[in-house]
Length: 166
Image (cartoon, rainbow, N blue to C red; front, side, top):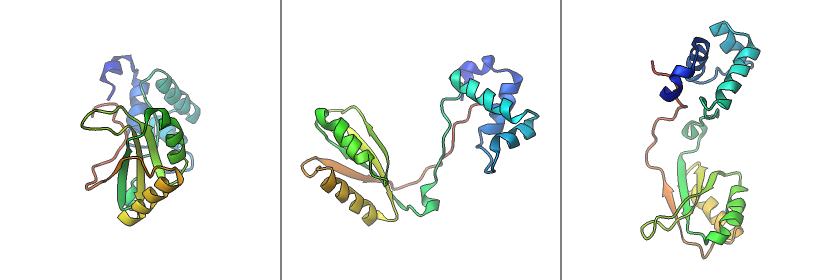
């Protein structure tokens, strides 16, 4: 939602945002199809989206992956309590594995939450995820590093940002 910039949008911006906020069409030329739907040439669609992104109206464009439908039935956030001076090299080591879909640093909340490095792993089942964690422990030399494997228990709806109401 971009209510703080709603007044800065003209009618064409609003039509374009309304056309893309539900997702891009899964066709070879999605911007052409959007343009056809709202009466705008493909290059103008691309230029306007770029301008909206440059102005900060659109924060980012990306893909929402529905892991379960792709056969990944176990998902875990693995949290690590890594010495601060080793976060960068260990994060790079963890992030190099294709089964790690996210890897990032976060602030600790001591004394309750000592973890400062997070990574997301998806697998066909829990054992597959645990095998990946064991591989990380072995190959990134994390045997002495405290960590927790937090499996997802429930899926919530996933979708992209909604920029305009109604």
